[in-house]
Length: 207
Image (cartoon, rainbow, N blue to C red):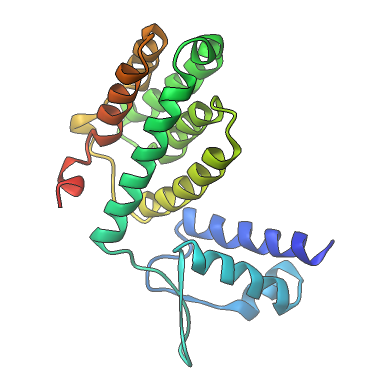
């Protein structure tokens, strides 16, 4: 494997530990242990740590080590607003023929998210999978890459129970999809996505 590939492997490994709650906010990240688990040198691990730090997952303190970040309410609110902006712009681009053509595939993802929500379990993975598929309809690489970064950080927040879903104000994904598919106005599509993105998060967004 190349150095870049090994760094990607280390990045995915740490990210998975964050999502699985094996690493929680405030925990120390043991670089040597990660290198040992992956059977790689410290160089790709250091590259992965630098990337994760820039993305907001980790914090490195001089002479103390690397720790899993503990986001503030301001950090969480900023990520929610950034995600809303990406999704609203995306809705303007896929409104009409693009989303109608992908309706069948999107419906299965929407149903999967709603099914998990009905059980009362956290649905962060299914929810992000559906919305990632929506953004992918734009065929805009910049938007897709940006959304993936925001989605990863959002999944970390929810996996760590920092921003748990409030099911009392849950906006069903199947209903959202059906409405978006019937809309011909980009303004209406943007407004509907904004309403959905804020459901259950009003208190955070009003900080």
